[in-house]
Length: 152
Image 1: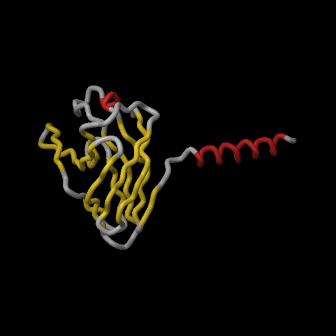
Image 2: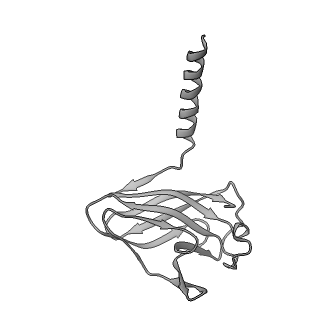
Image 3: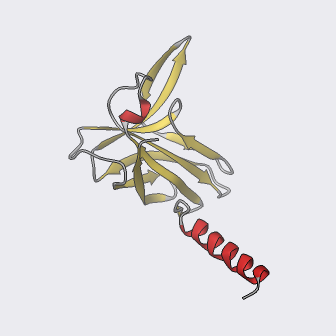
């Protein structure tokens, strides 16, 4: 095999590997859920965010219809929708009953904004584990996703 052919083969293998390692996307009714991770409290050292793990993810509404996230359940613990709200220099958690997902938008669930908190866990999680989450939308219905547990 000559050098250009070897390089082409290398880049094809690299591309296939990168694609297969990408975060899975679950979708239904125009709603796409991606980059779902459970962030462990150790990863938040020095941020005084409590000791409960939380979920970060992206929710994209690719439909032409507004929707609303109205609930979340987990096979790991009780799950609660929350938002971090800043009052001056003080961050507080606000419990939410729902989160609007307007048509054509992407919401980032992350530290310092919308997120899902867990309470009363049934087991201890460690990096590399995964859990199931079921997100319930007013119009798109229930979407079950796998969340990877991470330290970051």
